[in-house]
Image (tube, rainbow, N blue to C red):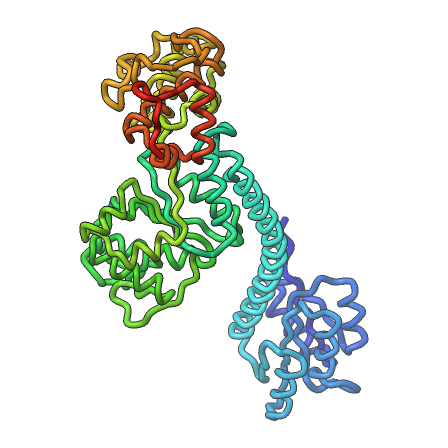
Length: 495
């Protein structure tokens, strides 16, 4: 049975007590007191929701009594009933006792019932609000803990050490450069072919920076026309263009204090480039259709698979914007130029796919390893991820065999950059058959093949070849000696 609200009537006249009881007791439990002392004893033992108190009582006025009640029992809703309407009493009642209503005699029974019902609703709302406030405080604390834990997990997940590479990989230099850029609040331009992991590198920079606890937002600039791209990044006012049905906050404001990553920045139009340059110069945005600008505090990291320097020379990309974006350039080499990373990346992707598909696939057969090492991967890591997911989905055993490898990979470069089949390895002791020897031997042979191919591409120029491979001149010469590589004619290598 649901308990009824308790209404306390405080009046020194017994007739008034009984009259009020008759009006109220059909909906409420009514308790009565003839003076303040008796009322206080009842309040100590009763959960009272509403107090109806006569103003003029012997020894103490209703306002004086309710002022004391307010200090000791602030929850009940307090009301005064009086045959007198002195303005001083009313003001004192509101200011000192927190009176909800001042009811004058003679009162109407129906009107009095409505007033008391409203007072009970007010009491219930106050209790609900108090509970909500306590819950909100507890929830806020919990949310802060959850957010802090999530941020810590993201930092660990996207740290530079999680970017798969071997110690000798040219990607190591790129990661070190990116790590150093994270320390400074300047723009970073990440270049590299599609699928090399430019967004992953951008996230690593963000989570290693002082903005790690703020948002990281991503926008693909090549996927939207100018008007929609501006709306996405800078926001818009309702009616600013066809389809703008409401005000919209842009990503630059949503990322306040954090990082905005603009992928495919090379695909933007000259008109948009002007607006982005203004944002970078002034630190302000103007939503479409708005009259005023808004200040923003974000770090901008951009990425492209285009040669922006060539685009600047051709006039396709603004030179001033390029210098703004490329304050700290980082280049990611393609997977074919870092064959020593292929076994590590492939195994990582295999492990992830096995977990995703719930299949106990643990490794590759030797024939598949050979294909992975000799294929050129024009789509880089993204292409490898798709291929390995397909393999795992089709696999029946614990190892990936040739039966689940796509014909495209088996054709070994038909759709990409064919790798040379025969290499001159001078006095190297590496096996000539990539399918034989240890995995380390096969990786080293492939690395030697990549080095020789690059040397031939640049006419055996050491400086250009070392730059293309992301190696120092000393490092490249060391590898030439290690693999016994030499120019086939006179062994003279221009520097």
